Length: 178
Image 1: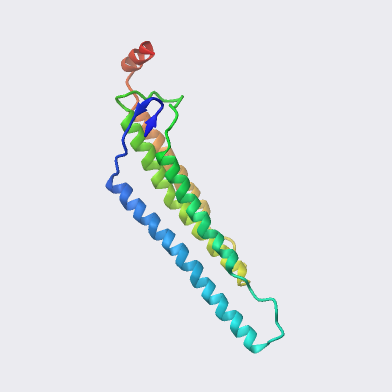
Image 2: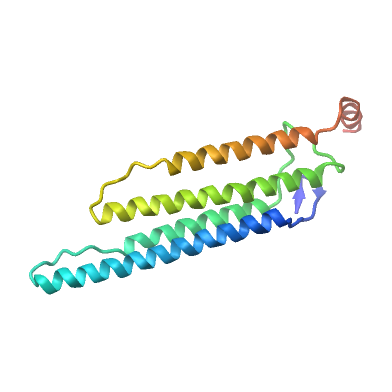
């Protein structure tokens, strides 16, 4: 892994392991809920068809599989953001002394934001399922709360990056070296 020309290593911390496990659990729940909903819709379609053979337009639940792919996309995007090399930030000074800390902060922020993003996908899936069974309850506070939590995580991460910035004397020395 690199930040500009500086090599850094991936420090896999316990907090990141916990967040990865939570993300995995949310992903498994999304898969489980999708297929449980499919079984429910299939049983309802069989019941409707057994009562009245003339009904031909039954609910198709397979469109709900899109949420599994969206969740995979969120996980893949976060992994790409973690493992792909980063450009040197223009707003902050990253040198050999603080590059590892900078990388750890960015990776932790990405790992933290993955959880509310997956929760938002889960909530969208629930709204979609409600609409499919004609329960038009599409108002939810979960998605705006996920966005607010993600913004707070990003804000705190930027604050942590500011804290690792070199002091004025070190900035002058770094600028003279460049």
